Image (cartoon, rainbow, N blue to C red; front, side):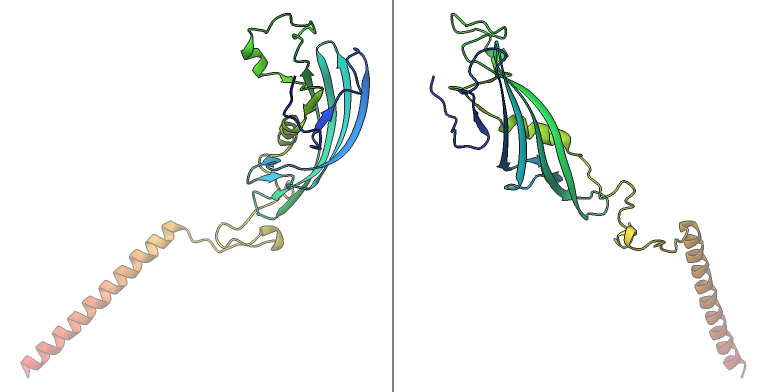
Amino acid sequence: MSTHLDHRNPLVFDTHELGRRPGAMQRLTRTIDAPRDFGVEGVIGVPEGDPVELELRLESVMEGVLVTGTARALAKGECVRCLEPVGLEVDTDFQEMFSYPDADDRGRVKAEPADDAEDDEDRLFLEDGLFDLESVLRDAVVLALPMQPVCQDDCEGLCSECGVRLADEPGHHHDALDIRWAALQGLAGSIQDGEKDEMSGAEAQAGVDEKQEK
């Protein structure tokens, strides 16, 4: 069977040394550069090219190779409350079965091509003894990341009026004006202005009357 996997890709692993004898096991450690889009887009993730440490255990079973592993990396993003940079250590476990292409889900050799193509869509297969760990690793890392990262659990965020980071200015506040009093003050101002206009008009009329009398 031909394969499109490239053994030079650091996330592609070769199982030929492991063999197909059930119970055989192999342990591997590898540090790889994080691929693109390794996290929650626009929120937090492992930057492309940053190191990701892998510890893997490959176990040969009847239907394929069971891969169990741990990934460690440093994710970076920003606090959703105050927008400050956030660094988060990621330490996540994962497990995935990579099936032999010529065996069914019970490990039996297929005599003829299977008709259950829909079931095969959800399975991962070995290709000429190789498997690609990227999709499995990405899913594990994304699930380990917070959807709303914060710099600290009690982060107070930013002032809604001026945008200052509240943690930098303890006791920061703005004098609040009750909108009901503001409306009354506006009404009082209007009344005072009206009274002044009336008084000015009355004074002007008095001046006219006084001239007429003279």
